[in-house]
Structure formats: C-alpha cells, structure tokens
Amino acid sequence: MTVNGAQGPLIRLQGVGKTFARKGSFTEALVGVDLEIGRGEFVSLLGPSGCGKSTLLRVIGGLLEADRGEVTVEGERPRQARAEKRFGLVPQVPALLPWRTVADNVRLLTQVNRNGGDHRALNARQVTELIEAVGLSKFTHSMPHELSGGMQQRVSLVRAFSLGAPILLMDEPFASLDEITRADMRYLLLELWARSGATVVFVTHSINEAVILSDRVVMLAARPGRVVTTEPINLERPRTPETEDEPAFHAHVSRLRHALREGHAR
Ligand code: ADP
Image (tube, rainbow, N blue to C red):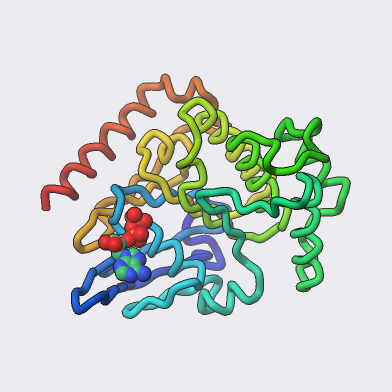
C-alpha cells in the first residue's frame, strides 16, 4: 500500500498538538504529530495507557479539535468529513440497542445512514450475509443481552462495516474480551476489512495485536504524547494464526518492544 498515491494520502496530520487544561494544570496529550494514512491502509496507534492514542483518534474523527497543526481528510476538515459520514466508529464496549434484535441492530443503523444520504450502505441480503459470515446466523433474532461479550463485539464490527463508511476508527474494540476470543476477533476483523477496502485506524496497547493486523504501526509515548517510531509491517496477507509463528512476526514485535522502552526512557 502506497501512502502517497496519485491523489495523495487520505488522512494527513501536520504538527498536530493538543493540550488539556484541568483545574489549573495542563496535560500535553499530543505534540508535533505528523502522520499520513493512505486509502485502504490498516494503521494501528500503539502505546501505553495515557500516551494520547484516543485523543489522536478523536482528532482524526472530528470529535475533538486540535490546538495546533493541521488535519485533513481528503483535503477536508475532520468535522466536515464526519458530517459527510465518512467515519464509522467501533468503541471499546459494543454500543448495541438493547431492545433490538441482532438483525435490527445491524439493519436499523444501515437505514438511518441511508436516510442520511449514504448510497454505499448494504442491502438487507448483504447484511444477512455478513451476520452469517461472522457465524451468528443462529442469533439473528436474539437480543443483545442473550449474546456473550465476544458475540456482541462481532455484531458491533459487522454494523460498522455494513454502514459502508470509507474510514473506520476503532478504539481498543477488543479490550474487554478474554484473550482467546480476542485472538479470534483479530482474524474476523481482517476478513471484514479485506472485503470492504475500508481504511482502518486502530487503537491498541497490545504489540502483538498491532503487528498481526496492520500495514503500519505508529508507536506513541507519553508526557508529552508524541510519535516515537513508525514501523511498516511487511508480513504477507492474508494473515493467519500461523503468521504469528514466523520469525518476521517476532522481529517486528521485538523492534516495537525496544521502541516502547526507549520512548519511556526519554
Ligand atoms: P490513551 O488513549 O493513550 O490512553 P488519552 O488520549 O486518553 O490516552 O489521554 C492522553 C492524556 O490526555 C492523558 O494524560 C489523559 O489523562 C489526558 N486527557 C485525555 N482526555 C482529557 C480530557 N478531556 N481532559 C483532561 N485531560 C485529558
């Protein structure tokens, strides 16, 4: 994936800074962040808790205004891109409507979006196919509370992809899952991403997760929040659990672990 294609990067950040003021003290959540993300790329923002990952994701998604620097999404301000429904959001905890079935949770949001003028939304048959693809056919008419956390997060993922937004912002979507479910979810996410052609910006504090998923890993460090290094991940796709046994996988993990330590030490 080239970052600078004929039309330039999809998302561009130049010298981005964000400071929070609370009770007379200031936190430099982000300083001098330069970043370019290409169309269709899978980029992870990796770093320890409090290093500014969520802040960066929210700045990209137009949910938070940067104090310094410039952010553009296809040449537009993030807020404008958000108004045009270019972003889909996958939160940490799946935000399903508790009084609607699985099918309705997926379908309803698709309809809402379509009324908002988005013609990329999938039709009902495609939504059913997606529910099938993530192994939840038997639960199509179940209510969210009848599903495990992992199943709910699968519905949440399907919903995000079925909306057809070209950019998906994911804020540690697997954080509340057990390790085994979490490992399965990674490959499910990769499958959905490969089918969709969407651009994904994925926040995580797991090095392994960032490496197995991404085209590029952007490592952040705290106080002040900044980019320490960017690591292109040259592992073949489609990636499988066997990829995690490859020496190249371990080499990436090891390099990032060192970068994380250096970031801390500075
Ligand atoms: P991460 O996602 O990497 O855990 P965050 O982006 O949530 O980090 O936070 C980065 C820093 O900014 C932290 O020190 C956090 O306490 C601070 N911060 C985040 N949001 C706010 C806010 N609304 N008000 C004050 N400080 C904040």
